[in-house]
Image 1 (spheres, rainbow, N blue to C red):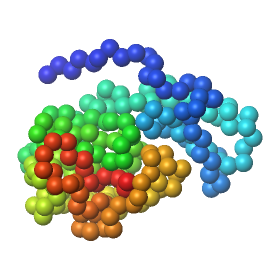
Image 2 (image 1 turned 30 degrees about the vertical axis):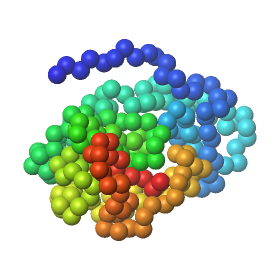
Image 3 (image 1 turned 90 degrees about the vertical axis):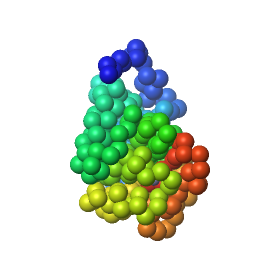
Image 4 (image 1 turned 120 degrees about the vertical axis):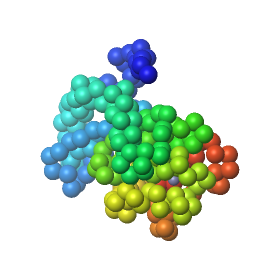
Length: 227
Ligand SMILES: [Zn+2]
């Protein structure tokens, strides 16, 4: 399979000017000097220390936009999708005896409240860009979780968890995600906040989830976010 990258443009539609309304500045009193920025859906969130003067904030935002543009990470890039696919194959081989064979694994904008979703029928897996910055073991868990859905259809029965737990850092990753969803929710509702999810049942972060999975198509996973 030859991957033919679609002709994309240099402009990906994200904000380029500091006064663009799609730029959200989050100020934190705990932050000292660090300034970071990330893309969430079609907006750019810039985190910086509280108490700066407006002109200074504006300068920092301009700097961050330039950095984002240079890094090429403004949006899920092709190469990242390819990396995600490669990593998924490795994880399937390592923990699931290669039983899961996804047809595509890609990053999707953080427009939904889920961490990830998959379509068992077509073998497609989608991972939210919200997870771009989480530790590798957390992302690996999310991928293994989705891969397991391709092998054990129908929600999260015990066999499903048995498979997922072959990945040794499952519990730890679930704890991380639970805490992370709380952080995201308190962070000015970036992703459109919702309620916390289920109290940790065995299904962890979310609990059993998806509604019946009756249709088998487009199952939004449960690891999903807290909201
Ligand atoms: Zn799930």
